Length: 269
Figure 1 (tube, one colour):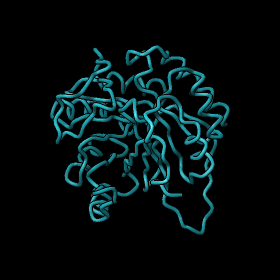
Figure 2 (cartoon, helix red, strand yellow):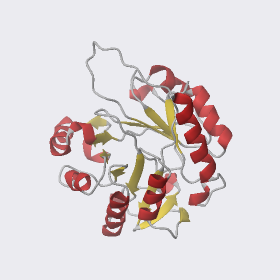
Figure 3 (tube, helix red, strand yellow):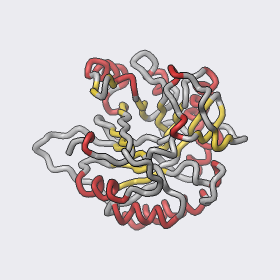
Figure 4 (spheres, one colour):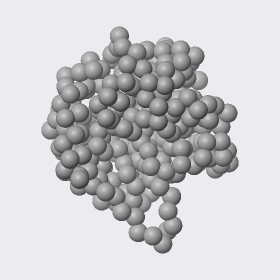
């Protein structure tokens, strides 16, 4: 199944080892995945059990939610960024909360890897060693430093892509720097239609065909949306929620989502 044939949302795929990534944008919707390299002759199996994957998006050292369509590559400047929400809490406080609530696979995303954001991200990694992945401005020169600071994985985006193709030389450099088991690739594609909400067709497609764990993000605003993803993905697609959560200025109670997550874990036992 070709990633380029998935005309819905955005897709994040870890080609190396199990992990997931956080999506900083509200639109387009995002999906990210975490496969483990195995022999082509071995049959892959995925344990059912939906999980909630938390996120921390950092911009200029502050935890924020930024309108996805205004989020540009740092090379293009930041004058057009529109902030939905800016938190009074630090990234480290969010990390500690996720740790206390037993949430794994969280993602720290630096929306522009400026010094203030880097410092905030490192503080979050220190607050939850081994419990968070980190992305934003990652390359072969700095990737290992984030692992040393406590990141479980590093998330790589444009550094390994050129004109829609993977730069395998850079990918090899990164794998050599941190080990392939700690490397996550971030792939994105945009729907032709500018549609909000859950893309159940994409979730179902991933649930049926993806040989690797995947996490869907984008469009979740209610508890019912979580159940829709669970059903559409046949219990094989995890989910992350950002701006809809009350901890990020939204209306969806974070504590309800954590309770739902705990329930899904219990059902999977």
